[in-house]
Amino acid sequence: MKKIFKIAAIILVVFGSFQVNAQGKNKLGHINSDSLLKMMPGRDSANTKIQTEVKSYESQIKTMQTELENKYTDFQTNLSTMSDLIKQTKQTELQDLQARIEKFQTSAQEALQKKQTELLQPIINKAKKAIDDVAKENGFSYILDAAPGTILYYDGGEDILPLVKKKLGIK
Image 1 (cartoon, rainbow, N blue to C red):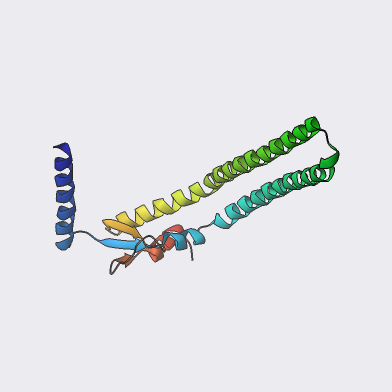
Image 2: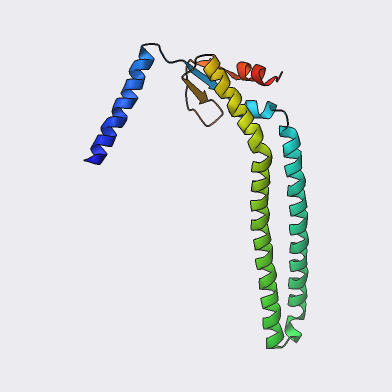
């Protein structure tokens, strides 16, 4: 019974919004958020800092992988002369090193995601605020993101990118 009520309520809201829109009270706008974010001040600097960290982590991972490859080659070369106990110890050592590399890769990925959020979120928030301000100042009811892959089709509405760029002082 509750499901039927919820579905009925959703249908009423959807049809109600279409009816209001048909009466011309709603104003529709769109913006390509990808284009806006590419123009935002501070974005290039943030991306440079992120890429510097990526290169640092990649270098450390490459060093660890080289160490693993060298130890594995040494293990293969001396395999015939090793006792069973030494073979088992070396295999465990190789497995431990592989596990350390995998753990480091996971930690590096998490650290990079955290850094990316830390550096880019203020830029995204500033863009979002400018979009909200432009929408309110110009009487828009809805702003759709026209970034590739976000909207399959749209016809009409007003592109607010120039207004948001002006609000942010971007030329």
